[in-house]
Length: 124
Image 1 (cartoon, rainbow, N blue to C red):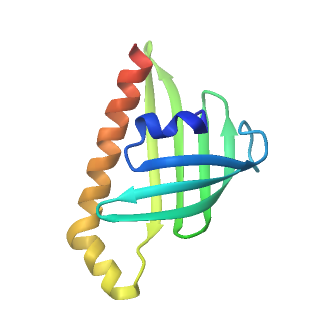
Image 2 (cartoon, rainbow, N blue to C red):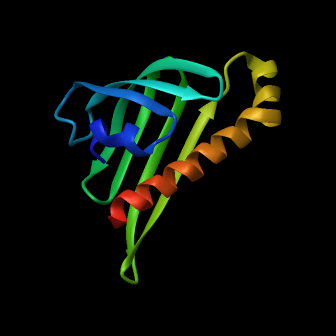
């Protein structure tokens, strides 16, 4: 959950910088360079939830209409990771159509690859 390490395993986050707060609690803010498919953008976010080793959530405050949440639950000697991301595609109805036809699958692939990288990092 260390923000500085997120680009190591979240494939679509290229850079992240904590801009205020301690980086270990709700209310922290960050600036993130995000690349999904061919498009790169920068957005700022506020951390809405942070419980060490249990949950992390952030909500974009500029650059994108998006929020995400991760939870980590011990299950039979392993950890169940649940990750949800809600976002509103840019460009109104045209963006929604593009998202439906293309970006939704790209996003899903990036999330699956990121979770694989997280698993590998946690097991080593």
